[in-house]
Image 1 (cartoon, rainbow, N blue to C red):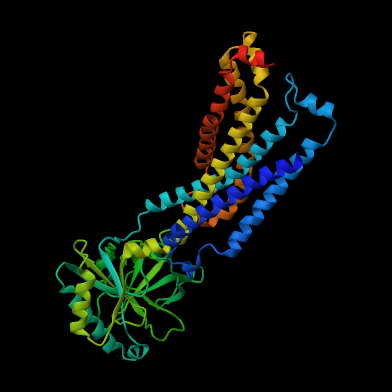
Image 2: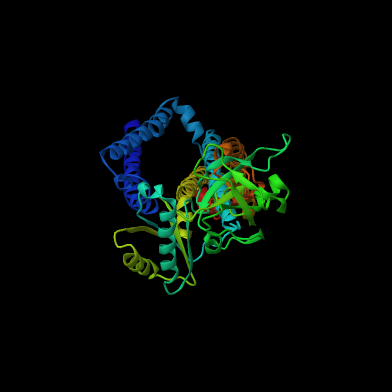
Amino acid sequence: MAGQLLIEVLVLALAGAAAGLLLAGAAAGVFRALARDLPRVEEIALDWRVVAYSLACALAATVICGVLPAIRATGGSLAGALGQTSRTQVSGRKQLHLALVGIQLALAVPLLAGAGLLLRSFHELGRVSPGFDPDNVLTFHISTSWGETGDPKASAQLVDRILNGLRSIPGVETAATTYWLPGVPAEYEVELKTSEGRAETEPNLRAESRFVGPEYFHALRIPLVAGELCRTDANTSAVMVNRSFADTYFGGTAALGRHLSQPGNAYIPPSEIRGIVGDAREIGLDRPTVPTVYWCNGGSQPGTYFVVRSHNSLPSLPRMVRRKLSELEPARSVYDFALLQDRISDAFAENRLRTILLSFFAATAIALANVGLYGTLSYLVNLRRREVALRLALGAVRGQVIRQFLWQAVRVSAFGCATGLGLALVFGRLLARMLFGVAATDSATLAAVVAIVLAVSIPASLVPAVRAARLEPSQMLREA
């Protein structure tokens, strides 16, 4: 009997492993499509190690789920076994089965909570006002060398000639340069000094530093708050600051006219604050705005982005840009075309992939837990069918039978939810750094998780409960 039971369990385990390998093979292609930017993503596929691991898991499942029940079934006295499986008694181990299902639900709840928090985080991120307009903005690079930066005047003239050519393209509104793109995570904090001096009690000037062309604010539609926009002028050096910088260090418009410098950087002379612009999320959409200075630099260096704003979405704009640059600078290459929206989206591709995978794992865990709940209740119904038939014959209402089995399922689900929420609160700290605009203990998300678990568990329990209530007492009693 024990051998037969082990063979049955092994067949089921091997069948499950084979089905899992087929599903994994199909999922690998989906994963490669979702994570195409990850290094060595093409190597993600099934190999002999994965197959061996799956077979080892199948054997382990056979041992864990087959040996112990086999020992339990073949051990003990015959009278005890008959007593436990008589027509008037129910197995005393049903509570263990239900507890195992509850534990399965408890382990699924943290996964579902994590997926829900990440989804809420992405929803909140989509509602953020970036402080700039990324629509219809094309970005790309133009090949340059560090040797060209030795002559700032010639470099500025080259960039001006390229930008004027780009602005002459039909449909182009304006063009500019920047070393970092707004909304894409990048930090470059520096310490600044002001020529006018500051009191010892005032805080040190620390701000994010950005090197942009004069048309940058027009191209990104960052509004001017006070003063005027900087312009290329060989005689003076100008700098723009955002509202956060002006309010934090100078109490607003008092920042205008002051001169900023960066100690230790000989390439940045003292520059006059010409204007104050609105706060833009320069260091990432998921980060708050911080004090920022914009050095109005007309030159270019390797890695500089050219940004071109068009009046409408122009699919042919990259081709027209290539054509124009081949006329102006035939010896230079133009590469890495991408819309600003796509670059911002790619910056959060890892978080998006993590959310998708966690959601998939959570859905799988909930599905397996509810399959276990359905199977356990069906097993209990099968054990208690004579008892239920007798109660029905004595006048019990079928609705009471349904409620009894449903109540068992609700208790198991409630235990799983309560335990799972505790685990979710403990492990929620691991997700805290990945979240935006939502706390790891968000009550709305956790309440939604409980509602989802109950909404899925109750229908899974209703089928065996209804089947128990539809038993025919006369037929079951004749079989007795």
